Image (cartoon, rainbow, N blue to C red; front, side, top):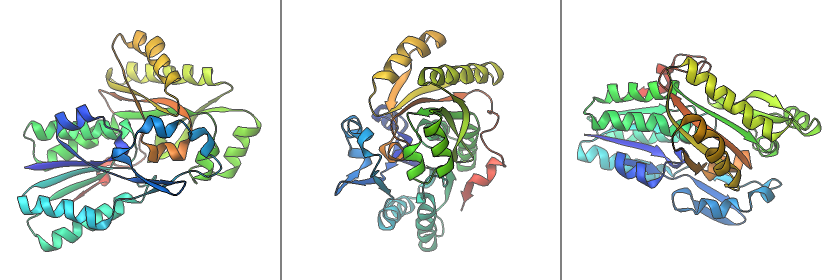
Length: 301
């Protein structure tokens, strides 16, 4: 038996968690003297005030080593292998703690087997590889084959988003002070993606309307060049109104299908600030997602 695990940053909704039998490990947020467990948060309620958090952004924290060891210990005792897909090491230190916990359990249970994978992303750009791995497990694939399905999912998915400003990313250390200053002074509206596990600029335009248009153009180009669209989810941070209207009026008519609209994990949202974007998966690997061999993302033991 193989147990599929991931973290709450995937933003996986309950229907997919249940149907795919995925164990979701929560990350945490601390803000205004309170600690929030991400898997139990009312995300939309939390996001009502996010525009006012720029001066003092929420702080994220990882699951405890004891909790992680307990999860892996339970799997080891049951004789289950673990396929774990986790938030990018470029965005969080959670993965290193996860590996330490898995290795600690391995020392006590020599027959315990796992494949831990750094997704090099977040949100549904992390979720799509999880879904691929879980489907492979349900199809009876081996741990190695299921891990390969995850890697294929990583290489064929992309996250594109446009924040209202660069303030949150700058304060969180995701971009430099100079980049944030330029964006502020010139009133540039950036289009960002996640490449090699960190946010990087994909385009710069002058208005948010143009940013939305540019994201759609990139989507269309990838669909045309990479074997068609497999799946897509529209993401938002803050008020959902724009994202829902964009999905309804632009994305769905373009694709001729309904589109899932869901909030990004608050652990991610706290570092990005108000934004809208989408994650999508094509049928072939996408150019520019990684600059190195994706097989190095997997840790087998």
